[in-house]
Amino acid sequence: QVQLEESGGGLVQAGGSLRLSCVVSGRTFSTSLTGWFRQAPGKEREFAAAINWSGSRTLYADSVKGRFTISTDNAKNTVYLQMNSLKPEDTAEYYCATGGWGRSENEYPYWGQGTQVTVSS
Image (cartoon, rainbow, N blue to C red; front, side, top):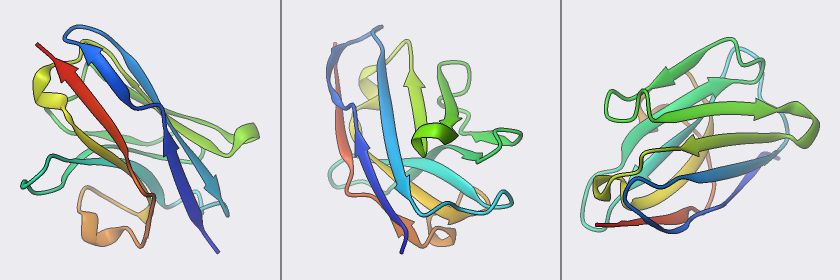
């Protein structure tokens, strides 16, 4: 059984940083991706970033590229999302998902419960 649990969300001022963590029980294959999606209330869920377990392949949405960095720590079965230069537009609930291959939420069968990120002006 594959389970995911996110943590690290919180309230931060614009320009600040947060690091999100996603602990995965049950490893994915190296050919599959683990990624982060985000959703604001009343809005569609959107892709942010994804990575394979070896770290050799990464994907980023244009809106976060250059500000967010996704990485893995195999010893801790964890995927991280380092979020720098945060903007109010980044405010959303962030979900970790695994078992996909691209940027579409429909590709990912396993999801965490989410962690809230709020960026103040």
